[in-house]
Length: 414
Ligand SMILES: Cc1cc2nc3c(=O)[nH]c(=O)nc-3n(C[C@H](O)[C@H](O)[C@H](O)COP(=O)(O)OP(=O)(O)OC[C@H]3O[C@@H](n4cnc5c(N)ncnc54)[C@H](O)[C@@H]3O)c2cc1C
Image 1 (tube, protein in one colour):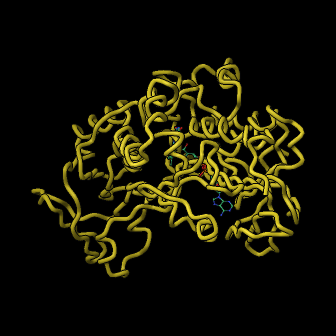
Image 2: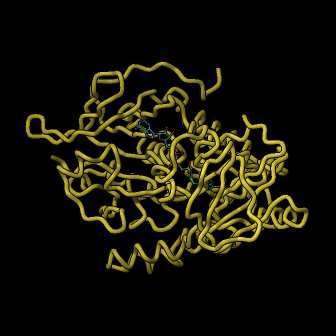
Image 3: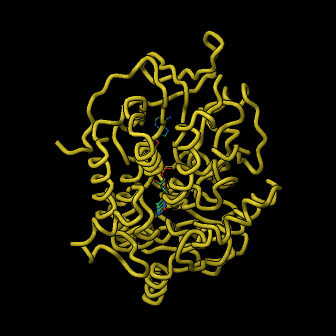
């Protein structure tokens, strides 16, 4: 049996450290925590609705047929930065230029190796958390974790590592009568290229990020013609955010900034919306010359009408010869607003916390106010910076959370 097979593990009634989510960020936290204090092993419980490590990550990379990561080989869940390179020693063809970007299979194999080496193979409990309720028991603060189809668990400390927010959907969507087949209008997170036959189809993809690029290349491989539309110009960038954001070069100034609003602005400027890697843009430009892709830039849909089996599109910058489309794909990213997080409604009432642009003002250990709840992922950006949602953001977050979980002087004891 592989280390990633789901094993049915009972859900404990009480938990010391509950980690919700078993993606790359949670895996990073667990390895860093065990490295610091191995005795915590029996006090941690990881919950994920999938019941295994990395399920969402694997689904995303498989569904978009992504050949390799955008981030370099030192970005991974093991505390040893060179561990992935060592793992790849006999697989050099799976490190892609520039900067040795790990191939998808290599990265997945490496994460399985991490899970095995750290003895985490049976470490995930298959449970979907529905809500987190702060309660007091005998004068002590605890969290009641409400679990789908199961009695609740009681946790002393909680780390929320549930990844990104819900799909960001454009306004014009609300105007469309729901008479179209659902597979003809989808957000990128719903699309699985592996299941599609698209020969001869016209597909309109909205969004200027790398996901648009992956979807376009996948659709063209299946014989479709693609129109890529964005409200800005498509532009190329190697990484999501400049590598200066991984260390003191930019983080020092960011953390010295005491104005949270200014920090939020710095994050937006650093990420600067979606971008495509030079390699993917090069491929798309070549396909443009072959007539298989067209780019519509500085252009937004104002109305989409489902008309006799095809989409008719109106835009704010009318384009000469816009065809009718078989499918509309929205590669418009996700909307992260902590105020709307479904698991944090009761926590926010019990422990009110200021937010800026939907991001909470966590303390330096990524702790939610005076509670024993910690965040990982996009919600930590005001402390961790623009790479908060990426794999490396998991490392930066772990460096802050681990001391608070292991040093009694940093714990807030209720
Ligand atoms: C297509 C794509 C490519 C990317 N490529 C890169 C890259 O190359 N490099 C990089 O650094 N970053 C990349 N990212 C960004 C980021 O690294 C990944 O999204 C990564 O998966 C984030 O890890 P995570 O652990 O925060 O979240 P996830 O991988 O989303 O894991 C969260 C987990 O939480 C579980 N969960 C959520 N809610 C609940 C609940 N209520 N109860 C129980 N379980 C729950 C989910 O099942 C999921 O398994 C990419 C993102 C996408 C979408």
